[in-house]
Length: 476
Image (cartoon, rainbow, N blue to C red):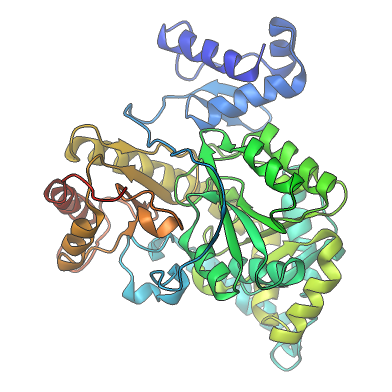
């Protein structure tokens, strides 16, 4: 029996009220005996249910029936045959080419400033200066200060993901870590596999570095591994760049089986996979999804992340566990940046070691989940009939599909209304996603969009614009 079959059977039991919200499900060991399956299959079943919102995991307590977010269609994932393509130089500016002050709440994926634990961060910065004022006068270790690397090891080790401080280098954010990883593993003209749709900031980065891209279609469990492995076999790609949890923009997470397969492929074909895992700590169900890197045996996976999405964009501190490419990454990082800000590194280490970061994560996950439910309910009520809204189980992106939407008209309406959104066509090199758009979930409905409108009012106004932008698309 496959894990999907078990998951579907449990959903049927929930829908028939044989299992009720809050009821504890059988333990993994009990499920393996009941279903006659392996522990991995049992875990994949619960993980699948968790991603879809039917189950919530409580640490040391088990899995419990949850009330899913409101019912409604989920956006479809276009299927196509992958091929190497050049990224257009005329892309819209990436998210990191705009400041937060000029971007509305729906544009860049980031937390509302009121949800940043400012006082706790200030205390950590103050303590760091008092303990070691030399951080203000001396250059720090090009690999990153040891205290932060150890704090990261301790933090993720609690979640079962083990590393050593020597495995990691500190970067100026996740995008910077990915940039360095690309420099260490590829050269101009090389083809890099990405998921479709793909975060527009990564497309912009690949374009600026003169890398070709090979878009791999997505589905509900991840990416099309069959097409990807064929590209690996034929040596049509020199590297792969994938998010693994709560992907931006569509919110999909790779299943455990997919992550295992990707790590195995990277090691089998000796082709590096760069893992963008910046949203992994924003799972709504309080569990940390193990990254692809967890199953990497030979060092071909470069795991990149940061606190930009989970804590504060402005800190610009990220990291990478670079495997066999660590020495090259540190050398390139040191050559271009010399080192990262030592005081901020020490402050983040203090913030993590004090327990404030984990406390913040527990709080912010609840807030974003509430935002996701509220956004989805409101949009499904106000958008045209037949619209589909993603039901993410983590992250900050909400992906919306509206049949017959003319994105150019919607963009014109949004600009006129001073509402910044991301059009679906910005997340691809192909003629796809013209009836999609993406919204940021970092702000609640009662927060102010601007001086005159709340987030709720702006969403309703945007929905009106969607109605006005309907019409048969000319995109073929």
